[in-house]
Image (cartoon, rainbow, N blue to C red; front, side):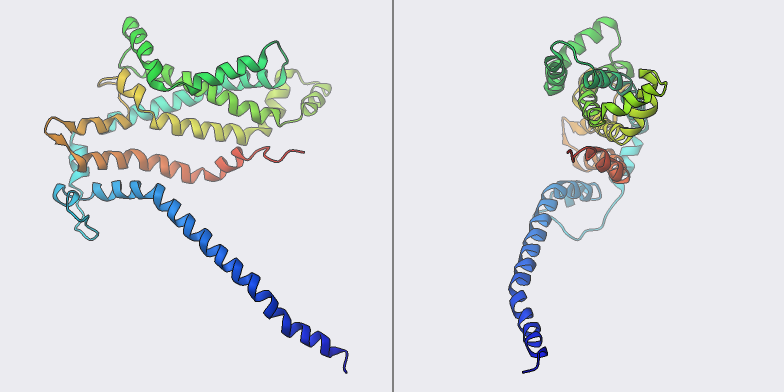
Length: 295
């Protein structure tokens, strides 16, 4: 018998042996794709329904069964713009978000560095207390903020909104950035100090550049949280400092809910932050996975 024959038989038998695992992999892949599609529809479905409603008339919105094919209209968006407050609300949102993120990072970075690098009594207790502030629901502290703001005469201003947002954003930023700094070996800073840097210079020139992705991810999450915040903006403002999420309350009237314009307002409010998240998704993933693999 030729020595090549066993090899030929082995090659002939191998596809038959590998067919079964391959079929199993195909089935597993199909199940994974189906589950992923269902999860995607679960989260994306309400958003798509809202966008579709914004292009429908009131009759089309209440049609039973829901209409799949219809003539879209921009009337809801036109009526929304004619109200004359949309641009003011948008401007308030942008100003409040930018100020909140910048001030939050200015306080959170040194605090996070202190928690990460210095050992002091009850450090972990204090760190947990800071985090517990973030755990409290906004409605639990909005009344004290309302009373203090009323006493100081700063209600319905951007300032009171920024202060209120800082109380939740700073603890969140401290815990995020602390984890990123702890992932940087302290020997790196010590080497910089041996080379002549002060502790502050080592922080600014060595540590912060290394955790830049984490700080960027933290800033992105702060932007999303501040942009979507609703409770503080609703209770602490009335007309002058109202932000974009509160515009939907204008469509709750005594005659009923104006669903079309409300869907248009909600779509315009959500779409910018969705586009922002898509544009920065790479930085967000990089920052959130920074230091995920440890020795």
